[in-house]
Each structure stands twice: as C-alpha cells, then as structure tokens.
Image 1 (cartoon, one colour):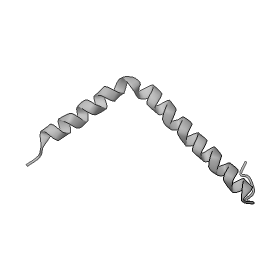
Image 2 (cartoon, one colour; image 1 turned 90 degrees about the vertical axis):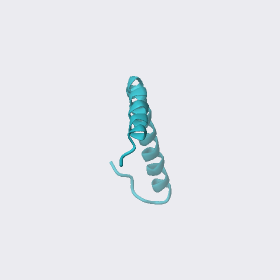
Image 3 (cartoon, one colour; image 1 turned 120 degrees about the horizontal axis):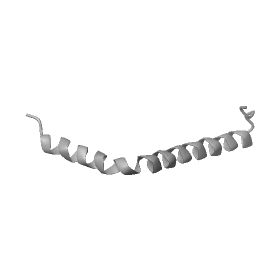
Length: 52
C-alpha cells in the first residue's frame, strides 16, 4: 500500500515554496558561483594555472 498522506505533505511543502522560487534560485546560483570562485582562488594559490 502507498501512504498518500506523505505525498500530500510533500506536495503542500513544495507548493508553499513556489512564491519564493525566484529568491531561492537567486540564492542557489549566488552560493554556487561564490563556491566556484573560492575554489578557483584556492587552486590558483596552490600553483594551478587559472582557467579563463
């Protein structure tokens, strides 16, 4: 048997996030780019050539 109440709770949670999708996406990409930039600086400090 399948527990539909769990699926309904997941759907309700995802629906509650929909109005903030733009902010969530912007925060995700901002954090992703910051992480990539930080790792690039670290690898450059360690002697690896920078990637254009």
